[in-house]
Each structure stands twice: as structure tokens, then as C-alpha cells.
Length: 506
Image 1 (cartoon, rainbow, N blue to C red):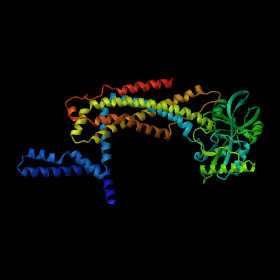
Image 2 (image 1 turned 120 degrees about the horizontal axis):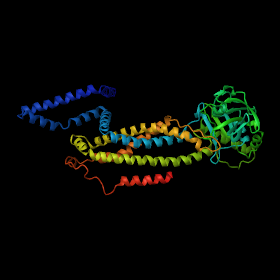
Image 3 (image 1 turned 180 degrees about the horizontal axis):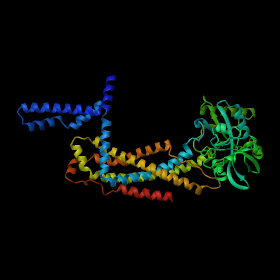
């Protein structure tokens, strides 16, 4: 086994030397056979011709030898890539048109996925986001204040449980009042969420008359003045001392709406009085797992605590939907997340249709190009190339186009994301919207997968048809014989899909 592994590694890293040895060996055996035929009375020319016929296609023998060494596929891929690049250099117009067509479609898909990544998949920009959980039920994601206290004090799988009550509020700065989104939170909010301040500190008590403002408010209302710490602001007719500024990337848990002020929940008597009512559920609850616990264990424990509470209230027959503790990704608020999922489904359908139209366009280009190259394919088949090898070559060329389209799409996605970010102020209502459209590893992975899918969608049918080239027809010069003209399905599909796309966009 080790000897076989050594030979395969040697074949991989010393390919040129082994290829030279193989050529020398083939030449030696061919010459030996030629000499044998010459000794039997054949002329030198007839001996060479007969020996070559007997040996068959030398390139086929080389391929079999490469397959036996375990590097045939890798060697073929390298040759196919080089051949594909040469083909594209010979037809730059086709290459540019196909890459731009795919780039536009992949770029739009990448931009939309960047939006979905921001609202559905990306973890919150906090410390150890994989340990941050949000509590919810099927029908709602809010709890009462008494339930929050019981869960906080009785659980063992969470190192902390924090409460947040998002609401609208006024923010009065030196007599100038603005309407903002606010969060009234428990004193352990920053510890549980795992967020530090860009300046100053978070409050640590439920009743401290302190406030933390957003980075956007610090930038727009205070011109990034470090002396903002200690300034007095008013909200809901109450005075607060600014103790900290939230980091730029943190915008609260009511995304995609940007929170601009955080205050202790105990400083709002009206909210406390309302929240103390066990029948009123206004609080969103967030927990941080201990190092040895899982989300499933936390869910089970919280449901067990709730069952104990019902038993203590002598109402064991009361039924509620089970509590689910899940990792916070994208939008933490369950209601906003459900709305975002509806929009995400709609956008996914639209951009998938755009990609399909682009694949049909490029597929038609490849079909025409394959018809023009029938002589080339027939010659390769005559020289010993199998149908599988021709198919592999054409799919490799489609892969190169898809890679070029993917790179072009990433560049276009950067521009599109910048346009989307500049458009957000036009879409917002009373509260500012904030979404991150960075091209992180999830977006890059998605683009790579789309490019691979594009390779199959664009190249499979043209490659399959081209690999079935009739050598006799091609050599007679009847390049376009057999091309279906009675049923222009590609054209019909393009018109129909474009019409549907226009209706959906309208």
C-alpha cells in the first residue's frame, strides 16, 4: 500500500519526468515492432504504418497509463483548462459577452443573498455569538416580567438571562427632539448580549438613570465628541446621563430597525407597572449558554421551569406552546424575521429567474459555438478521443465561463450593495434602517455554488449535443445539418421567462 502511495505521489510531483519516461518507452516498443516487420520483409514505410495501426492511438495509451497512475483526471483537467483558455482568446467577443451575461445574473443573485445573509443568517456582532440564544414560542417571542424573573433565577444552563423591551421614544438633546427606536433593558443586558461600548461604559443596574446612545446618534448629534460622556439627555420626560456609546456595528435587537438609545428598564415606572402584570407579555428574552450546555438543554430546562410554575399556580391543566431557545442569527425579533422570510422568498424567486434567463442566453451561445466547432470535435473523435473526453472538455470550458462570471458578479455585487446601502434612507419610515451588505464567507460560498450550478445549466446540453458530433457530416462541411429549426425552444423560453419577470418586477 505504501509503495502504491509513493508511486502516485511521485507521479503527481514529478509528472514531466514520468511523461518523458513514458514517451521513451512507447518509442522503444514502437521501434522494436518496426524493426521486426522490416526483418520480415516489409519496407520501412509499410512497417511503420503497420506498427502504428497495431499500437493504436498513442494518446489513448498515455491516458490509460495516467489513469493507472491515478492522475489521469488531474492531467486531463489541466490540459482542458489550457485548451479552453486558448479557445476563449481566439474568440474574445463571445467570451466577453458570455462572462458579462453571467456576471450580471450572478451579481444580482449575490447582492440579494447578501441582503438575506444580513437579515437571516449572519450572527450578531457580539462576543461569542454562537452562545447567544433568543427565547420564543411558535406564536410569539415575548414574555412577561414575572416569567423573566423566574427563568433568570431558576435556570442552570444559562450564565445569564437578559430582557429587552423595544419601543419608540423621543430623544431630546439640548432642546432638539428627534423620534428614535429605544430599548428598555435589564441591567445585565451588555453582559448577556456580549457587547462592549465604543466609548464609556454600559449601565449595570436596572434603576441607574443612565443611557447608552448609538454610534449614529453620537456621530450626527454630537459630531463624535469624546466629551459626550456625562452629558444629560431627556427621553419620555425623564433625564438620563450618557454613560456610553454603542459600537458602530451594533444596532440592537430590533433589526433591521436601528436602536438609538438604551435605558434601564427600571427607570420607566409605567413600563415596569405594565410589565409586572403576568398576563402582559412585552419582553424579549436573551440568554447566554454556559460552556457545557446546548440550546436543546436550555429549551428543555426552561420548559420544565414553566411546568413547575404552572404547578405552583395550581393550574397544571394550562397549556402553552413550548419555549424554544435558538441561536441568534440575522434578525433577532421573531415577528420581523417572519416578515423578512416572506420578502426573502419573493426575492429569491425573482433573482433565480434572472439567473435562469442568463443561463438560457449563454446556453444558446454555446450551442451555436458548438455547431461551428463540429469539425474540431470530429477530428478529436477520429484521433481517439472518447465521447466522455469531449464532454469533459466542453464542461471545463463552461466552468471557465462560470468562474469568470462569478468574479465579474462579485465586482458588480460590490457596486450593487453600495447602491442598496445608499437607498436605505429612501425606504425607511419613522425609524432608521440598518443592514450590513458585506461580502463575507457565506456570500462568497454562495457565489461559488451558483457558479458551479451555472456550469451545469449553461454547459450540459450544448456539451452533450456537441459530443454526439457525426464525424462524416462534419468532414463533408455540413456544419449546421441536423440543427433543430422547427422548434426554437430556447427563444420561446427566453421570451416567456422575460415576460414573467417583467410582470413580477412590475
